[in-house]
Image (cartoon, rainbow, N blue to C red; front, side, top):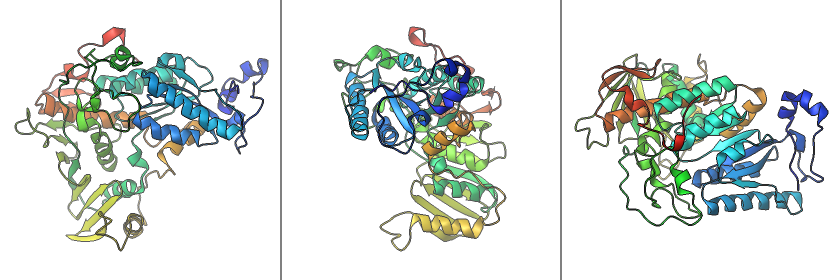
Length: 452
């Protein structure tokens, strides 16, 4: 079945061209409520564990059609293509083989019939692929952490603004009710003056030291390493074949940023949302004692004096003059004047209530007349789709994703270099102490560049 059709959005953007070249529609379309000319067309880049969920969502929607998948691993690439073809065969009622599979993301981005892409590669590829995507006219949903380093975040924001594309960062906690209500409670002063925040996630990264093994057949290892160093292959970085675990490249300095940029990109993002510093960031970083071996204790300080500390705790914890608040996925606890007033944390303990009930009751009691109300989309991905239609900025626009990941990178400086320094969030450079050489790689391999 041919899928050489344009979407309604591309039709409107290119009306003059299309009057001379009418839409080409497939001879048959599956029986759905959305007309083929109104479906958004998607490409998926990076077909690992994270993309499994995204792809399932995409192929189950009537308003989206997946035209291509891309991965440097042949097994994952072909399995994803088959998954799309099989799903659309079932929908269409006839054999469908319209999903293309690419090893090189540039071939996918060169297709004029693709409206948007989802990027779920390892972190060291995010900025290069995302910049290429917006330059190619694609709207982008990119997994967090948004970039491998600070210089990449700055260039990516420039590229998105130049291209005027819709860009959603995959920081989906922003679209979850417990986190939104928690941030509204802080933003509206319900806790009083919040002077301390604790963020709980795992360890900083470490240098890559795994022994070299034979490369998985069908894997383009040179392309996997890409702009990073060409290290010896190990399934520690890239598991063989189809896998259902999160690979450990994120634990290395060479390709990730440890749990600071992994879960930290979620929890620090929420902390900055609550502080109202989206698009900005900390003004100081403080290294923990014995920073060479420390796993916790790094701090970020914000302009109002609030100190955010990397701890072993409950997720994101806010400590105010009138109360405290703890929030994590599916968990919520509000304490006022030393007394727990709303709590759902452990389903085995808090059996008499639910997360929805406790969050809703807290919202009704404390936020009924709130001056500050934060966005509440139906879902994080739906917000992206809605913004493609409206051309508005989504709930976690590129500038927000960039400021969150920059804060993570600044925290990482404390663990990697022992940085205790002043930071300028407007210029995204050190104001005093530290080294601006840390903002980017020493070198990008194979002529890969990050430029808006």
